[in-house]
Length: 146
Image (cartoon, rainbow, N blue to C red; front, side):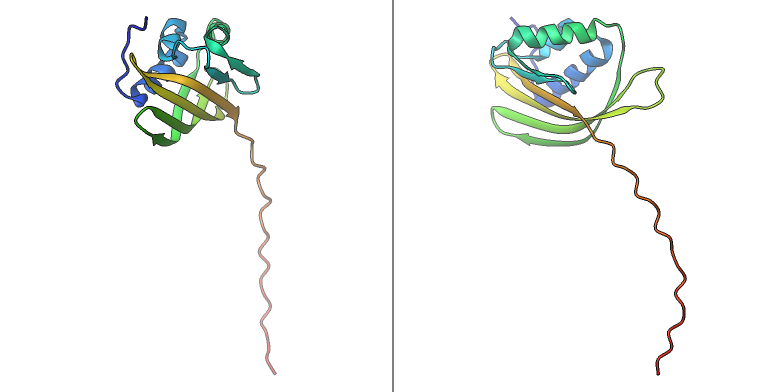
């Protein structure tokens, strides 16, 4: 039985990212629904189905001891009475590494008898857009009309 009641999907999402940053598996799984129809896809990883697979993946990831710093940007929320879909960018930094890795994420929350719970998380690296070469400006020669 879940101990925490998240009164909004935004509360559940805040708890999800706090658990991710602190490496707290119990807090992470508190956010997830207890359901066998859960779906989780980590960047570059396979599709994980059901509570047991999702929990095992987070246990491995959070158990590594590596702490992450996560900043959320560009959120878009589509919310109904029972379902809320969040599209956002996660800017994930690993302390000691020079560059943060941007990730595009979709989080789906379902309103349950114990509050809002995550039922799906899909995250994928944002491709690096190659920088376009600068366009050289050429001074135009004066035009003479006859």
